[in-house]
Length: 590
Ligand SMILES: [Zn+2]
Image 1 (cartoon, rainbow, N blue to C red):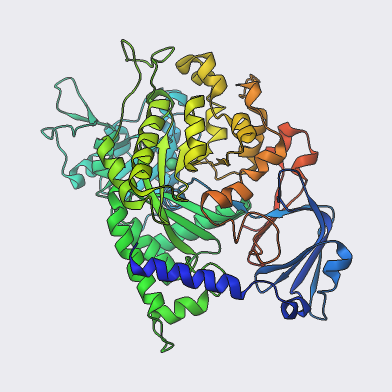
Image 2 (tube, protein in one colour; image 1 turned 180 degrees about the horizontal axis):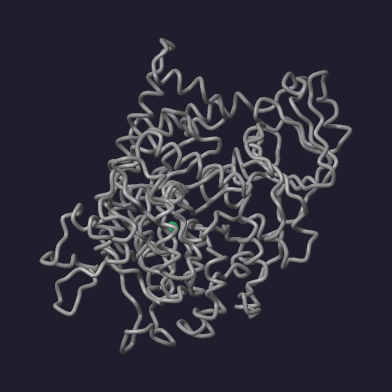
């Protein structure tokens, strides 16, 4: 481990020991005391309620019986009446893409476009808001769900503008289209070859660009987009953070920093301008990890070198007197992200699919995305460190690749508390679940993604694999920590209670229950977005439960999720989100 991180870790431990509650601290009056509604601490395997909770200087001063907590009341203490509403630890995003989501926010919203004329109209309306030098970009349409059942053509997009590049990207992020100006700016013409792993749609002559593009071809064009800087970058970040807070989250994640070439710059600007009201855990895309680490070390060294002379580092530290100094102005680089396979119809499996996706023949099992050696090198490098490895995987063959890399790292370095994250981990065999437990890996399930797609999963993977997918009941019985994550913008919103609802009921929109044996109680599902979520990102010492000494990261819900019909958990309103004692979002505010 480079010296900088180790030193930061020691300063964190020292700080934690200094901040342990002492008799003197207990005598101090609280800033606020909450009571008058259920206070669910999320500690332990069964629900535990407190009557009252006191906050002081951004941390929880006391939680427990009303009479005991009342001892912390002073003349300046604010008494907050929950009025029957429920107080919980702030929710933690364990796999989302807040930066990517933010960029989409400043683009035209194409979700739910009924047909191509509507899409073109939305893009045209958006064009006025695009700053000079920018592109007109829209995100979120689904070609299959539009009346035209196809992606708009280059000629149709030329109606929006012939002077400014126009780019649309579908809700999966893997396909899109552009106008003539876009291809001109990107230097792509009829004679340009398709890149490996992607394609530009062509006319009957096999050359003329029709507009639509997929995968690496789309990425090649997208990478030419002018970078998000200045006010545009700030709007993207603050808009996304507000959206996260509106769903009760006090910690967000960007699990793919480097998907855009301007991402590191955006995050550095976020730190410098103190743009975030909530914490942001960043995992750098595999190819970006060295650049991201270099940037993080520069920030970290600046913080360490602070000497009170009023330089940037001193200002950064002064602005963030929190418990966990791994964050600098609410941002920390926590890990690296690899993609081991694709989505539901490209999940890399050991056994053939039950039904092949369209266009696939023979015994289809999908395929690997990266060589074993690449992943093994990463584990060799990061396994003994604090820097977590996150791996996107849907099929069991992808999980095998991950487990093999972990086994090699353990053989070489010994066991460490690394907590590799198995992102999605949609289908794992029982023998893999046993290994997951042995090596301390944490699966993060996209419950709200697999279940609406449940019928498709049954068809693609067959009844058995679908029923055993997201094996939450098995994990609960085995004592394996697991989390729920929305992967927004893959989920259209960074919702949390919707994840809980889907994890509890495992019901598709048509009412079919996928794997009834794997359903879990609402309390266990809530732990997957609070206590276990904090554990996944190695922040359980300061977040995830309501306990004295932890951060006062809180959410107030209109109703108690443990006392409503489980089908309605997703509909419970978030009334207020509180980060370190400060209200950062309230229902009704924009
Ligand atoms: Zn993701």
